Image (cartoon, rainbow, N blue to C red; front, top):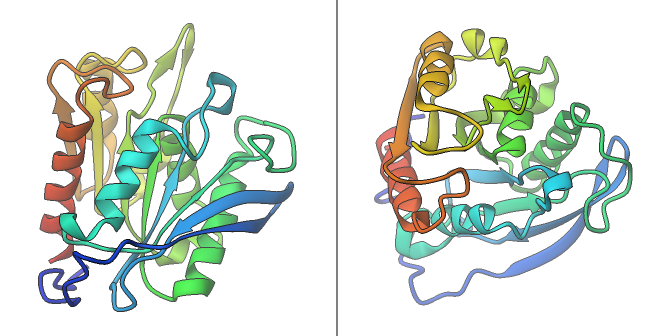
Length: 235
């Protein structure tokens, strides 16, 4: 990841990125998706995965939307094309919610993004989307070969009596950031610290003080942390 962002593109600050609706061919059927077009010369593309569908998560989720803005809006300095999609059984996407097989939906979205833009991909997931993104990264599928960085927002560690394990992170040598609130209801600071400690380098754990799982009242702080990390990694 040695591309230089600062001089990679002309000034598009006065241009509103175009939004395009599309359908992806997913393993369980058609997936509803939208792409925010970026600069034609952007060195990277990005995929953002939404939180748990059974909790109301979809591609229009507030955290997903504000994350897209960092990656796509010229004022943040990136202007990447950004794809968002609805997991199977969500919105107009076909199929039925599974809870694990959705990693295949992520791989299908990665395939489309690579075929469309032919550049390295920054993979972002929020909550359930972060878990599915990690699973997709760890897949032996060729679809994961073009991922150059991983962003896990609000990665869940526990929901009720169910604990989540991410053993595949031990072998995932991609640059990655784990960005959560220090009052996240689904992952304590201690749990996140343990998960990140076991992950392969390079990695970073960033905690937003006073923030809950959904970054309520702290979306701007989340955006700033994400943008700062991306600028460190991509230059």
